[in-house]
Image (cartoon, rainbow, N blue to C red; front, side, top):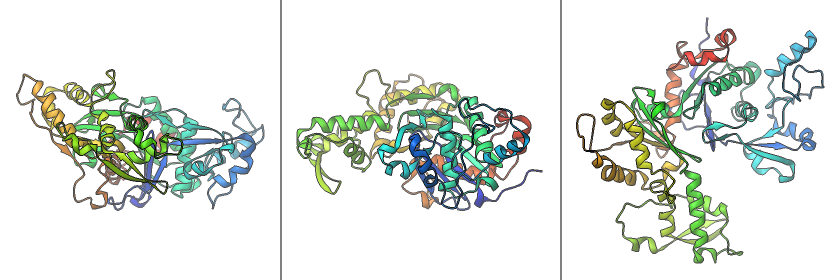
Amino acid sequence: MVAMHKEESFVIIELGSYMTKAMQDVTDVNKLPTVLIRSRAGIIKQEEATEATPAASNDNQTPVELKDASTSIDSATNEQVEVPQADESKAEADLTSDSEQDSSGPNYVFGSVLEDADANTIDSTVEIMTNGFVNDWDALSAFLRHIVTKELGIRISDNTSAFLFSIPVQWPKSDMENLAQIAFEDINAPTIMIMEQPLLAAYGNGGVTGIVIDMGHDTTTVTPVVDSAVQNSSIAQTAVSGAAVTTRLHELLQADAETCEQFDDASVPLAFAVALKESGLCVIQLPGTDAADTSERQTFEFGGKSYTVSKDVLACAPDILVQPTQASESVLTALVRQAVLGCDTDKRAALWENIHMVGGSAQFSGLRERLQFELENTVLPASNIFALSQTRDTRFHTLPEYFVGWRGHAHWAAFLGACLVAKVALADARHFVSRAEYNDSGPSIIHTKSF
């Protein structure tokens, strides 16, 4: 018999290429995620590892003692080796220990510890995910153990929390199986679910069908969702995203002599461009906006000093999300059209009328209005066939108003959707995978259940 779990113990972890979100307790879905942590790992230099390990572990946890060469995991090959029975039990206990990290691998640091670390103590940094896919599974395992033990305060040795993992779209089956293995074997989860973020975003906005435009750090992904099913064959993607806006804004600032003169070395730091992009001052204009309005300068505080930047620069930089400067980059409206046309004819009208915009870069003021203008004035009129399957209008959805705690966070709709699903699915054995099922069938069992 599968044990049922209480909502206050449910854990949501949303994996992202730039930022990972997490929280425990979905009793009140009006609460925002409690953990926001950069999806990046730092590897401590070998000579610093012995001193750094105690500092990196949880305050109420006992650091794991380093094993010698006779342990059950060969640190050189990471393969299982035969050991006496007494050592096997010790190895098994280590897998579910309350240490933040596995003592047999590199010593990782994350979040504020990494940001504040002395550069001389860090051997290298690892981007755990890029373009929505995992680069380093060992780092991801350590990262999840850090979130569970350090950020959420859960003891791995007696973990009773059910987990819902929200993942980027288009993960291959092997990656989902790897994540399931980490969940059951490294963080000792009793039950888990894995769901794709576009579907959860549609749920968060109160829908089951629509076009989900996820504007992240590395990529912008356009995903059709039809009747609660992600249409993987119709997904469209471009590299024009948040990172591209940062690069473009930095280039424009460097080219503006009046801005450069305000810095001691006449060079605009990249950190200035990042802070400016995230300030909310960048506004995307509709075609025909009076250029005279953007010729003025905007005051911006950075590092305790006041600077002025051109409003024209603030408007031009995020505009590449809709109209890329490189001819080789796909236009966002064309990607939306491609995704819609890849779906069944009788579903296209519903897709045009249910557009969901999520992701950090979806926060730019004026973006939704500009995209709607471009779709209704360039894409839809181009069709010569108007029937039940074709529409001349688009409609953008956002979070329902009754989720008052989420006001101003519509770009996090996928996380809200995960909370809503968790309340139902993690309490129903028909939808989640239990440890007993995992032990019987292995990681592939994750593909047999869904919500």
